[in-house]
Image 1 (spheres, rainbow, N blue to C red):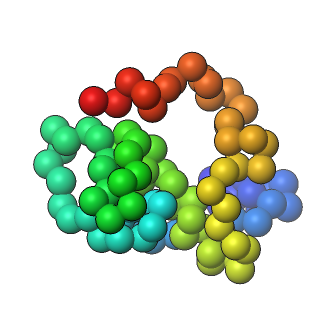
Image 2 (cartoon, one colour):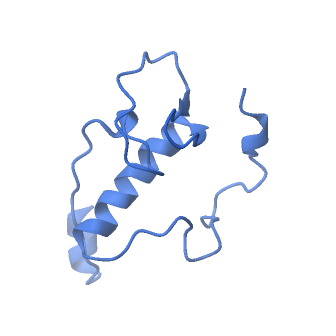
Image 3 (cartoon, helix red, strand yellow):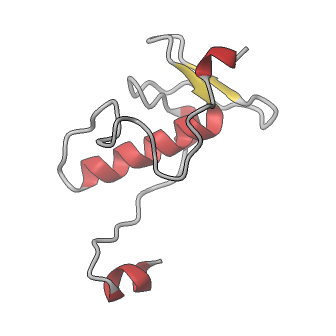
Length: 95
């Protein structure tokens, strides 16, 4: 990945992936270790709920954005939807 970014003159930065499933991407609270069978992230402080993998990806995104000195927004610039991602996945269906 770093080689491809270098070749295309695109900035590349590695961020620390540790504990991403234990941090709330919304408020930054350490929510504690979860079993692998627990697939939903729920923050008791800010009540943010999403899929565990989505929360971990948001934490990684936040760390990357902060590392380059940009403020972290709550939505992606393209309106909250990544290109190629299905927009029919609803958080309303989270148990």
